[in-house]
Amino acid sequence: MINKLLLIVLLISSGLSAEDGGQLVLDAIDNYEELESDIKNVDGADVSVGFYPESVETQVEGESADIDPFITTGNLQQEEIKKATSIMDSGQRVTGDLSIPQDRLIEANDKELYKSVARKQRDSFSFYYIKDSFDYKDSRNVFTRTYETSPGSVRGGSLIISWEKTFINSWVNVGLGANFGAGFNQGRGVFANNGDVSDATFTLWTIPVEVGLSLELPVATWFDLAFEAGPGVMGLYQVRSDFERGAKGKRRRQVGTGYYAEAKFKLSLSNIFKRSGFAFFSEYGVSNTTLDFIARMQDYGNFQDDITITGQSLGIGFSFDYF
Image 1 (spheres, one colour):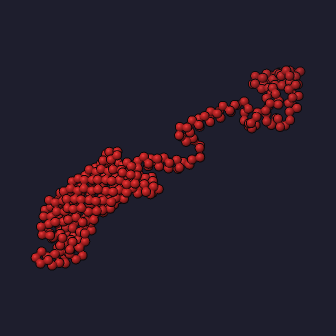
Image 2 (spheres, rainbow, N blue to C red):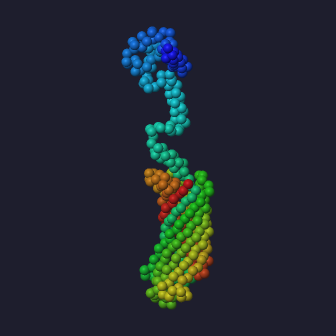
Image 3 (cartoon, rainbow, N blue to C red):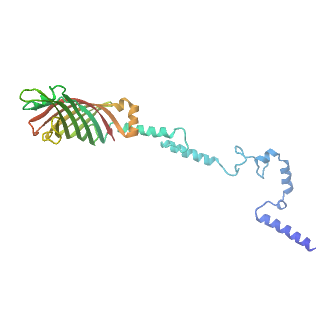
């Protein structure tokens, strides 16, 4: 008797806990028999898709069985489309959009930057060769006899390294330039009394150091005209081979003062060879590379010896503009 009472109590308590837990208790449904009949009439295909209790024939259209049919996805998709369209309209790249490779985007941005700075510069480095066709004049005509007319004489010309800082970039670029160079001359010594050629070899180094105002006019996309002028000092360093090392007169040093002026026709290699120009810009930050044709004049004097170096000459070199 007691066992039967305990069994009844357990059944009642399990039914109450199921209802409290939100579970469906078939005994608690009024139309249980009708619902059970509807469930039995549903075939396997309908069950695999899922149905709403109020209509066994209503199925979720356009969605797979693993998607919750009670979540509406249409509004979310529309919001994502609107967001992506807005980003693309503003010129930005949509995250996950692989239609344009990242390296092509970087290249496109660099090309636009290269175009914007190709005619501008902040710093410029150049080196060029100047043929030594200047006039060296002294009262005894020693230079001419030693470095011009003696057998085996050489006038090697000058190699000049130049740096320029640009302060104004406009229809004309204005800056400050500084030059440092070295020139080489060599010849046989000549006796002053009879003009005989000695066995001694004389070597003369010319070392100009100059500072000047520079103007550059961008005439066209493929060439510029540049001008530079200013004061300078010229060092002369002479060495003769017939004296022992350390002997007086073995080496002679002297410094003179003067001025210089240069005109340059700068042919833009970066605009002629655009692929190489862009590669130089990408790798080294060179906004413009030019082949320079140079006309130079100079006038130096006031040396310890009675000598002047004047005249005009031509040269050729390269310039590299940085921005």
